[in-house]
Amino acid sequence: MRYYTIVITPPVPLPGKNAASFKPITFTSLTSAGRADGAALQVDLDLFQGWYHQPTQNGYIKISGVNFADLQQAFNLNPFGTNYCGIKVYVGMSKGLPYATPKQAGLVIDGSIFQAFGNWQGNQTSLDLIVSAANYIPNEDINLTCNWLKVQNLQDAITQTLNTAYKGVPVLGTISPELRYTEDQVGQYDNLYAFSQYVNEVSKQINPAKNYQGVGIASTSSGFLLYDGTTPPPEIVKIDFTDIIGNLTWINTYTVQAKLVMRADLDVGTIVSFPRGLPVINTAGSYAQVRYDISFNGQFSVNSVRHVGSSRQPDGNSWCTIIECVIPGKAS
Image (cartoon, rainbow, N blue to C red; front, side):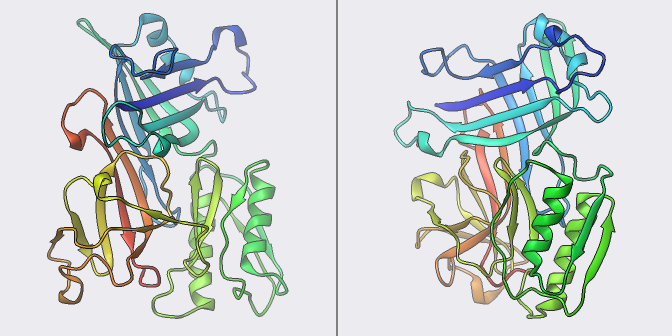
């Protein structure tokens, strides 16, 4: 069955507010016994994950049928200055359907609520949320000072910069240890977008190989992720035939899009493998050398993730995860 759990927590500390009036709110598709709840509220969501040096929009969640007490909380969920309410979103499939894989369900967002809207029209109520995938705001002004010494590799410099600005947020992943500059580099960046663009550009200057994708920084539910496609992945996620909705589609040279049953175990930078022999759709951006073949070596690197769902819509397209993948070493 379709599974979701949404946990909303108040900002800490609460500036000038009474903490007793900000009780955490939980919406879930499961009963207290852990079984699918047929009376669970309808949830519509559209959540994104991508690299910071590439354009990515904020996520959206609509919870229909909320009670009036929760509807009145919409005012309290809006930011107080730079204090944002926290939100955790778990999605996937729970037990109940023959091909459901509960182990693929999990946390996709451990982030913040940018805006909240309570709506009451006729006998319909809803709570609409604009959310970020992290508890820090990528375009918010913050002092990101990078002091990159020529004896350091780029990964150490990035980790040091992020740890200073975002205390307590883990920095995961590995990049090429050969990314070193010929002299000290000192820079100050106003937000995470600007810093990520600099990191991507300078890594391509150091490694000018045509197919090198550069260093990317992304937010995951576990913290920051660094990736440039040069280091072996910790594991390769195998996509089964029963995970795929419809056909795979070549959307550009070396780039394929796949629609999967909603799952939480894929992040940007994850290496996936598709079963051979699947039908493939081609677009105008496809090229003859890649038509009618899933891949050259069976593996792709996930470049963006989008979770789209409407929990009570019956068709299979209405609870899915859409990924765009590139053949490793072929990203531009």
